[in-house]
Length: 280
Ligand code: C2E
Ligand code: CA
Ligand code: CA
Ligand code: CA
Image 1 (spheres, protein in one colour):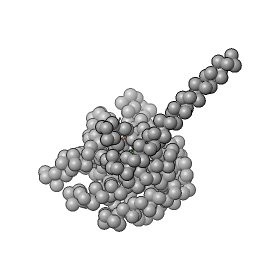
Image 2: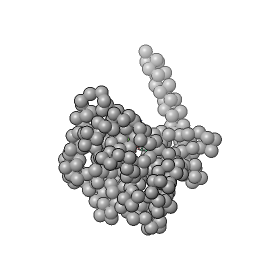
Image 3: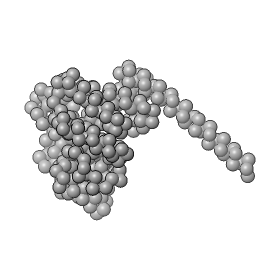
Image 4: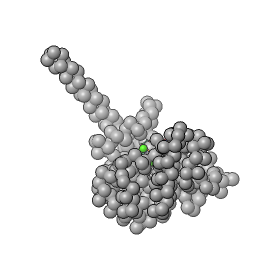
């Protein structure tokens, strides 16, 4: 029995080793990818639910297409970047290129357009996010009110004090700030009163359940009600069906993002589709 257990242990360790070797290889590849522009930025449009089809903004989502044409999902490489510290360089790259794009297309964008950029927990809690974004907007001469900084709820909860102060300073500078994946990070709504955020993004797990019964509807309704009472804007994510959009509107959501309206797309397609003549 002991031998069987030992063998199992060995197999487990082998697997672990293999796993961390694969991770190391991917980390090295990612490091190179950041330097050699294998990353590109996609954008997913965001719309008003109360004024149908009105474009209010877009979220920047990073894409990694390797030189041999392989597509690696951010859901896969962002966690690895977070574990290895590479995320700081990735956040830097994303921030600089997002602001550059905003500058490039500013004359075509609606005046109140907001470009949302994701920042990782590490960058936020160490105050790097402030440095990066202030630096970029100065270089590209973009006003902060055209930018929204997305921070996940779990990142905020992980280091509440540092993050709260950082959020307050960013808000003072004039940036909008969204709590991302709201409803999944086990925060108490009581924390909301101490956070200078402007937007709550309701996580897509609640959207997926909207049609199946009352409980997700109750959650969305409660988040929208409390959020709005604090003066926050409410955006619902992951809307894939017209029915979900109708329900979300009835439950008090004001903005929407999801495949039913538009998928993430290359900047050039976004400009053609939404900012071309006829949309101005
Ligand atoms: P997120 O910030 O919650 O981004 C939303 C994710 O939902 C995106 O996945 C988007 O493509 C997907 N999505 C949008 N609409 C729908 C829909 O209707 N249905 C479904 N099923 N999915 C939808 P993506 O692009 O794969 O990104 C995954 C995660 O990776 C993001 O989640 C974010 O946490 C992270 N990420 C992506 N880009 C960046 C970045 O530039 N910087 C950082 N730090 N993290 C990023
Ligand atoms: Ca996000
Ligand atoms: Ca989200
Ligand atoms: Ca997410």
